Length: 173
Length: 100
Image 1 (cartoon, rainbow over the protein chains, first blue to last red):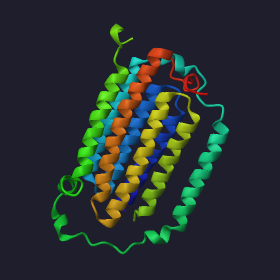
Image 2 (spheres, rainbow over the protein chains, first blue to last red):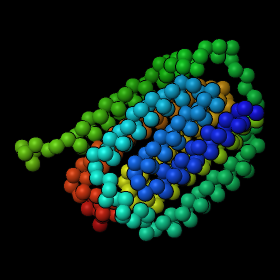
Image 3 (cartoon, each protein chain N blue to C red):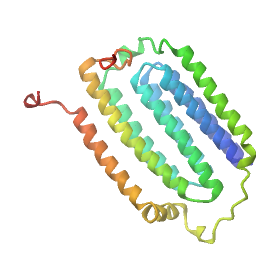
């Protein structure tokens, strides 16, 4: 029962703030509501017993990505874009497409609802280990190569971001 | 009782909100935020199934999704800054230099 209440609270916060993110006129407000959505999704992770992922969500998304967003918003002018037209000219057709998308997903999920009734898996005895321990073990044994590739991806992203954002010296031009 | 179906519906809702944001907004910052919303929806689905099947694989994949999201945000915001230096705008309709 408590699980259900928590799920609906977090889901409501996540969906309402997500709607406010995409409807807001001020980018700073959108960033704040994005933070609320990310916190609510971390709560959803907690109800799914993924405690490590909830921590990672708060640290990386809220502490890293969102702060990066706010930094960039502060670096570039905000005031002018508040008074501009906020939506594309093709917003009607975009809404129709999105409506078709959500109807399709919901219909498919609803039709396939019974196939989600998989036999209840008994947690293996080894799951006495904590969630972080399980994730860490999987990450450093079975998924070691993807993990290393992810680190190279991050390195490339750092170098790329610096190259893109740095000021060009006269010699380069 | 919260079932996997509940979580999948939440993921579908968040993903669709992200799609609407990408398709309708003109502000490039909000488009990047909508992409983050869509990645969060994917993570919810992965972890719902990880919990349902009692396997940790979904959570490992969610970590990789978060990594890619961080890389995407860094490069995307770098592009936004470089663009703003040249064009002084965040409006994607005015960024059409490569449009034929």
